[in-house]
Length: 198
Image (cartoon, rainbow, N blue to C red):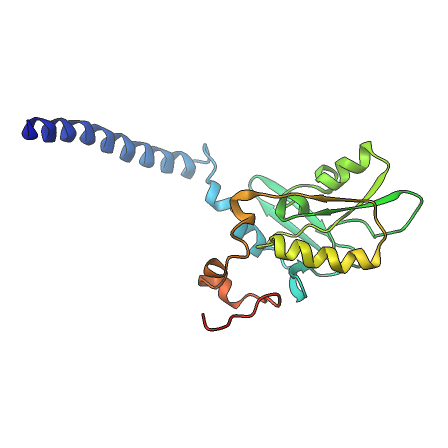
C-alpha cells in the first residue's frame, strides 16, 4: 500500500511541477515581450526611490521636500509630483470659508503613480463642502507616523474631519522593528523609535 501511495504521489507531483515550471517560463517570456506587466517592477519600493522629492527630516520621518516638483515615470504611468510649502502633495493649505479636513495615510493617500485630480482628497473635495488637506506619504508610513503628523498639523490648522486610509497588508508591519532594521531600511531616519538592547 505504501508503494502504491508513493507512486500515486509521484505521478501527481510530476505533472504539477511540470505545469508550474511551464507557467513560470511562459510568464517570463510574456513579460519580456511586454504582453504581461511585471508587478515587481512597479513595486512601492522601486517607485519611491525613483524620484528625488522625498525627505526624512521631519519628526514623523518620510515626507516630501517643500515647494518641490518631480516626475515619476514608468511604463504604466507618467505623473508629476508637486508639493506645497508644507511639503504635502497638495495645493497650498489655505484657511477659507470651507471647512477643513485632513486625509492621512500612506501611498494610497499620497496618490503614488496617480495624477492629482484622481487622488482621494481631490475626489472628496469635488463632491463635498470640505477643503481636504492631504497629509499622506508613501515610503513605510504607518500608524506611528499618522499619529505624529496629525499632532503636528492639528495644532496649525483647525479642522472638522479626519480621514485615515489604512492598508492592513503593510500598515501593521511598517512600524515593526524586526522589519524596520533589516536590509536597506536600517539606515532610514526614524526619530520616533529608539533601539534599546535589541
